[in-house]
Each structure stands twice: as structure tokens, then as C-alpha cells.
Image (tube, rainbow, N blue to C red; front, side, top):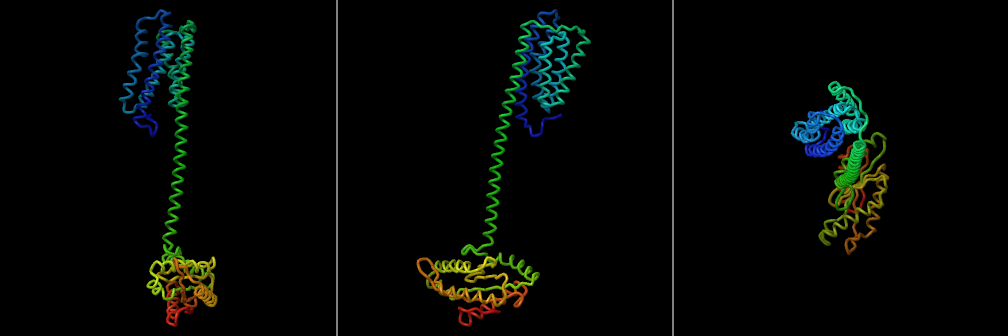
Length: 370
């Protein structure tokens, strides 16, 4: 038998000190009760010596032994088992006085029950009866149930004090347990909130890793992940998919004329305008620099060219707000369609890029299909 799991040495020694205090006080009261009862009977000096040894000296010796034992909990259990055995012997030696027997049996049975549960109760009753039997063989089986009124009163008071002590201790333990549960619940809620915040931050970080910091659009890294899935789906379902490679014409001139801050404003305004004119099923990316990529799902080359022309015309007719000024710019767009112009992401990008290059060479502000 060993201490319950998680019981620290500090807590165990505190429990021993509590047991020492309770045993010292309880045994002192028993000394008074048994002494008054023995004073009215003819008992030899050896029984008085045994009573003083057990109820005065023994509590201190038990604490000293338990506090120095390798397993204090096991040592304290042995001492309580010895209490049960000796209390039974005292009952037989005093010829079974009713109220004194009630006090002795209550004390020893409840002590072991508190520590070991039903097993402790069985042990206490067995050892108590064994103590009675052993002492009865020596002192005889004389039965004298009556006690003097003073002894009876003290026995009743002892029971009340003992039960009150147990009740108060149980109340303190219950309150500590309640406080601990409340603290654990609060800690659990705080931990859950932290986990929620961490998950939110992780989701935000994942989203930030997929998006361009300047425009808020999906970035080129995320494009590769999505296109592999979409091309596989289009191949399986036999649906077309078109890419629009979009470039802001003369963007370097805008930067040189108005400054890089205005250039950033133009990029943000372009991203916003393109996003407003795309369908929910389409995917818009900032491909790099002043280039954007619009993925139309589903759309063949004819539909893609119509969408591109509409975007180009509206963009040219919509001055962009850049800081305190307005900038007018145009778009060149190259169109490539799966599977007319390529069946892989790389081949489609290459086809759309070549179409864009032709639009640039043809004078810009144009749409070219691969």
C-alpha cells in the first residue's frame, strides 16, 4: 500500500501533522473518559500504565515513526489498524461498557473508512473484534454495560465533537474541491479561448501566406496549388478553363511620373476593379509586378475573350484614384484555354504569356488569344 498518486511529500507531511493533532486531542479525551471509568473499578497499575502509554505517549511515537518512514501513508495506515486492534482490546479489558465501546468503535471505524473506504471499514471492524477476542481471553468475558453519568456524558460529548470535527473537515475539503473545480473550469475556459485564438491566428497566417500583402488577392504560390486541382477536375468533367494574363500598360511610366506610392495605389485600385467585375466562381491572382491572372471557371476561348474585352474597356474608361490624384491606364490581356492551348498549368501559362506579349507588341490596350 502506498500514498495515492500525485500526493507530494509536502502534502503527506501536512496530513501527518493533521493526524497527529487529531490523534493527540482524541486520545486525550479518551484518556479522561477511560480514566474516570477505571477509577470506579478495581484495576491494577499495569492497566493504568498501558493506558497512559497508549493515549499519551503513543500519538507522538506514531507521528515520529510515520514522518520518517519510506512510505508515510502506509505507516499511518498501519498505525490506524493498530488503533482498531487496541481499541477492541480496551473494550474487553473494561468489560464492554456500552458508551465507551460506542466511542471506541466509531473512532476507529471512521478513521480507516476515511482513508480506505469500504475496505478500511471492513479492516476496522475485523481488527476491533479481534482485539476484543484477544483481550477477552486474558481478562475474561465479564460484561458491565453501565457507565457513570459523568462518563456517559463525556462519551456523548466526545462523539459529538468527533463527528463535528469530521463534518467541518469534510466541509473544508468540499469547499477546497469546489474551488479547485472552479479554478480548473476557469483554466479550461481560458485554455479553450487560447486554443481558439491560436487556431484563428493559424488560419490568418495560412490566409496571409496565400495572399498578396499589397492587393489582398491570392498570390502566385497559392495559384499553383489551386490550378493542379482545377485542371484535374476539368479533365475529368470535360469542362473548359481559361486564363487571362492581365498587364497594366506603361506601369513603369506611372511609377516614374507619379512615384512608387502612386504605383502601389494603382495596383490596389486595379485589383479592386478586377475583383468587382469577376464572377464568384472565378479566381483572381496577383501574378507578379503589375501582372494579374484571372482564371475563368468554366469558360471556353470565346467566352474568355468576351470577358477580357469587357474588362479592358471598363478599365480604360474608369480613372483610378491614386492618393489625391486620378490616373488613367489601360490593360493588355492574353487568353489561353484548357485544353485548346495546353493541358498543364505550365503550358497554359506559357500560352497566355505569349498572347499577352503579342498584345503588347500590337500597341497595347488589346486582347489576344493564344
